[in-house]
Amino acid sequence: MNSDSLKYVLRQFVERTLPASRPRELVLPMGTGKVIGLAGVRRSGKTFLFFDTIRRLTEQGVDRRCIVYLNFEDDRLNPIYADELDLVLRCLRELYPETVNQQVFLFLDEVQNVSGWERWVRRIQDTEAVEVYVTGSSSQLLTRDLATALRGRSITLEVFPLSFREVLSFRGIEVIPHSADNESLLRRELEEYLAWGGFPEIVLADATLRPLILEEYASLLFYRDVVERYGVRNEKLMRELLRHAFRNTAGLVNVSKLYRDFRSLGFSVSKNTLFEYLGYLEDAFLVFLVPRQEQSLRKQAHNPRKLHVIDPGLVAAFKANPGRDVGHKLETAVYLEIRRTRKDLFYYTNGSEVDLCDGEGEMFINTCWSLAAAEARRRESRAMALGYDRWPQAQGRLLFHEYAPGIEQEIPEAVPAWRFLTE
Image (cartoon, rainbow, N blue to C red; front, side, top):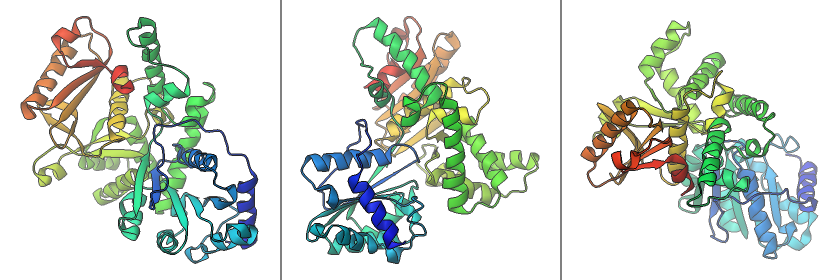
């Protein structure tokens, strides 16, 4: 990292006007004395959460010269080595001597690009008057790097694409109780959300540009966050696995079946490689692999996992007709809504299937696109009965999109999905 280039970057940020940002449900804590880590898929809004926090600091009277924002994917900073990170504070104080003995706020974006960054952050956290915020697009930022290096001196938060509530807020749409017109609008907006997802740029983009932006995202995420990051050798296999995942959201993943399917397509692959590649997709926040709820960890490990993708809109980049299987995309949207606040999530099967449950037996949820057909209502009634049989004290819900007259009397736990997603 060249010190002259670094000074240009530092001065440019101090002198620039912050980009406009819209409020999110997640607000970063300040003044905690801990390193704040944000992890999540690329383009989910981590950087704009930084800008929102910087704006709040300046409104509280913090001098912009005491605020450092660095994006470690900036080509002017590359290559970057951990032993050069001390240049950051040194160059800041050379540029702005008045910051000496002042508290400095460091916002480090995509920090996983600097090997060994966590040791430097730990040292300056112990020895300097700094408040540090970092982002990364790898789950290892949460599970390994911060937790191991900082040992209780960090707070880690996950950032997802926009929730359905946030999409409505971005578009200036209110939820009006007991309004038939508003309910119709919310149902249409939910269908739009399932079609295009919740990446902030997509939500605000012109409808004609959305397919192009999603294709760009798919390519960027594949190459930058999977192939390059993990040095994937069999790029063709990884691409096919990623395509399979996004075409089968809310479906079960059986590695033995995947192995047979890929072998039949002519791929030379081992089961270990498939396990490894699925781990890469999970670490990059592209997919979530949900285990079956079992008392025995051995049984849990031997059962297929249910796969959910990070955003229902990305399905359009991998599937020729993304309008199909809307029920699976709705199930994924419900999973993502719950996953924002808790991780102990499972599915359960025993004749019928419970789509989602927690590890404590407190709640379970089934999702169905349409309850208009009698067979669909019978199937979902059996699934709800299975849930209550396994967890008698749990709160069960059946979420649906297309209404069936009298469903509240037939299945009292039935709730429109839009209502659940806006609560």
